[in-house]
Image (cartoon, rainbow, N blue to C red; front, side, top):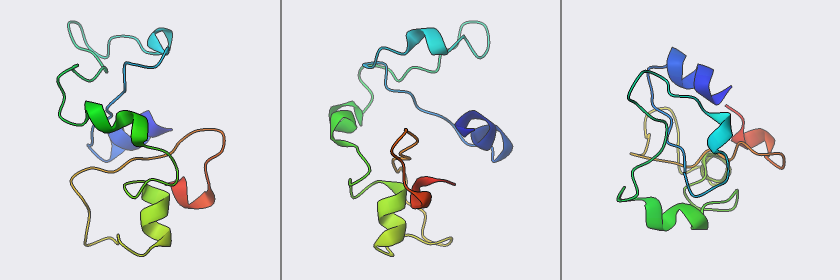
Length: 89
């Protein structure tokens, strides 16, 4: 669902390659990858993201820190088994 959303809204998906999910993704196009470069500026913050994070989409909605006119440069979408209704786009 995240891939389809990104495709339909002309956005990108950034995948943390530190997790053991390499078999889930194929090359989107020859010579390209879904993986974030290891020197990506947000890599040091990746382990701190969870559904309670201040950069989490659902948390931002609950705290009223985001709306359709104030979209941050990046946010975390908690799209895992324990996601809340607010985390679902």
